[in-house]
Image 1 (tube, rainbow, N blue to C red):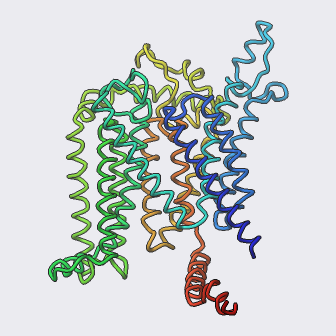
Image 2 (cartoon, rainbow, N blue to C red):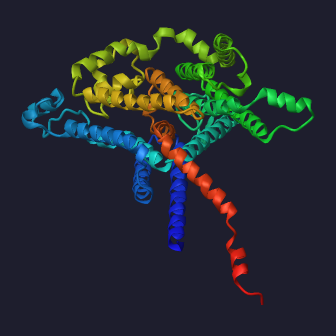
Length: 512
């Protein structure tokens, strides 16, 4: 028995050590401007791989998380196999780029392959594999509802703290980015990132997490009980005091996150984030109106009144909220009015479409966009900038990876959505978690059509760390969870009824 307790203590200590190392490394990634340098990503990827191996050895793979682990491994293997296919010389140079065959005419030694940048592709593969590692690590470490919710709360609170620090630095030292001089986006808040669009996506996800947790606390608030207690001159009941305190705390964190989001002045980021928040509001209202056990504050109200009134109120309040904050960030509206459809991102779309059609279905190589797109760039779009990203994740994925890019996006999205749908159907008390997941996915889907935020490694790692606990909650085996909770309750009650070891010893030993 004693050996078993020692093993459990050692296992718990090992898990805590893994958690500390994991989140410490994650914080360093954010402090390094989102791991934009491949060297930083390589170091972090190596550390994550070691922690993943240790976590699998110490904790094992949770049964409920096995489908998520298998899906992540499938995506990683497909990406690895496709990069190998693109960078390996094939017999008689079939499917290879014409540029490689042209080198042979000048008697230059070259190995014709599909990719235009075969050496860089393997390094760029890290930007895809490292977030997959983080997702797998999150599935293993968040092996229960309690750990998953604690992780989401930690990400929400830490993100709000980052937002508060970013706002303070933007107001006090607007020309500074962390500890160095800021050279771009001087009129916008970029947080710990270089690009304001990346910061907008980050703060949008943080706002979604805080909004979801806020809704869970609001559901526990019973206005009638609070008013009755105040009318009778009694203090608030413990559960109501806890619910009100939690609601106020996360409401403040939510407002801080939204303020930082708006100060980024990212048009697509702000619009996509508010669309995601509106989706969460509608899901929350519809859940309350259709649920047989509605929010305590709404009990006793007709369902039709709840559905109609709450639906209209949600749209009105969310619209006013968005309009107010967008007015506060007038520069974002000004940019939209001045640039309009003349934005360079729209100007290059015809050339980008031509490049996709010319190189489909094999693509040009994972890291080759900057090199390959030069031939398709319209001079009328300007000649003073270098397009190293397409500002459209979907088109760039197909441009670089061909049919594999379509498969990776479709497979990953289908799996995440299937988990969220399952969570919406199975969870009641924690339904805000899949609702938050839907909002995060909507934000990423919309913003990825206009910007490359998800291609920044630091943000991709944060997204993976966020989706992992959400998936855990959605796919959790409720029967196993309820059985474990029932066993813990029985053990606690039995332990409370048993006499302590000291009392038994006193009864057995004769008096001196």
